[in-house]
Length: 78
Image (cartoon, rainbow, N blue to C red):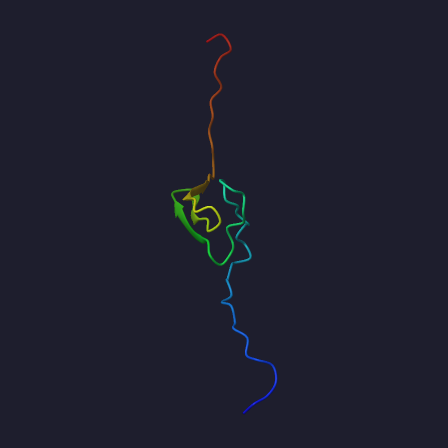
């Protein structure tokens, strides 16, 4: 029988690319890069879309990073 330190359970490591920016839940502001939350990144045309699930508050939805936004100004007389 081997004596010494008891075996410790290893927690799975989360591999997050270095270029991924840190995202926060828009409902509770907890970071979405933890082991129980879900974060899926995909692209829709020119936009980057993150499908997210927050394990802290159970919010799920999409966060869209728009590549370009065009807004027109209204005339003050209208």
